[in-house]
Image 1 (cartoon, rainbow, N blue to C red):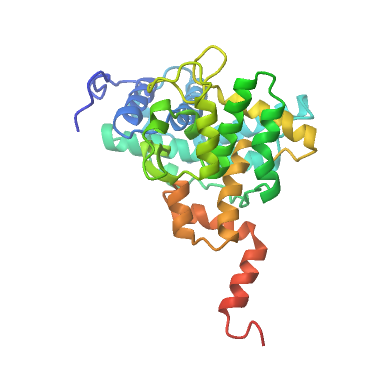
Image 2: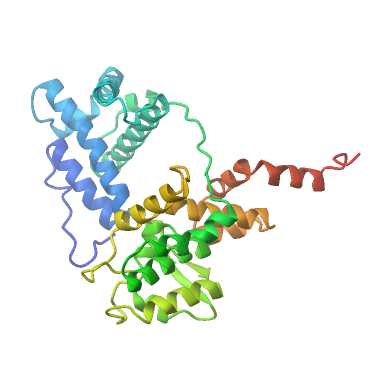
Length: 334
């Protein structure tokens, strides 16, 4: 597969050290795998920690070939080191959110990143390490989504907008949070939209680019469209290539600004910490499920690659499970 124009050339012929392989892997993830920026950053962070530990452990830069001879004990030593480091951090900062479940999730993420790196090494550099297959990932508790109630989700856009001093940006905030709940978008998807994306809405369908660069169609409800049009009427630079949701300096709105706005609103309303922008996406899915939408439709609307990602909403809604059971089981009402 040829690399796209403007991309770095392949480093497979010049890779001699483990660090070189890591950098080449980042290129591969970007241009061949088309992994998201967040995925690349997380992988780079975890594998950099591992290679740094192994380099210190063995007293110098690691030759590429040495990655194939690391033992199960070496991998376990690294994971133990990272766990101890996190526990020390928790002791120094008692108010931090370091928990046993959090440690387990960190361990699972690191193992996953390292395995992904070794899959690349095998594919591009013919380096394998059977010891890695013996490394067990911890069993994790299923984290159920915590959606907002329908009433709270509907209150959120206007409530957040009311606390915004600038009237124009109050319309921006109302439009953003109405869109997140009304279309079930991730905040990154909403903030990535340009003015032209809204201008190209056809038959009340908006095309959104989600994880992995996959495009999906989402319906635009009348309330959502009205909120967007109200914001566009005062948008400081409404040309097609401009960010739909912009900050005070005209650049694309930073997610932290939107998250802070919702945090301030939830504190004023006495809502739990789980009331985040992403909770509006959870609310979108849960409220559709409660009102009879099937899982396949919700999967398409959310842009989930796997139905298993969508099925978690059935576990979070015990009332819906009971209703389905009562309607479907022959003996439920006897």
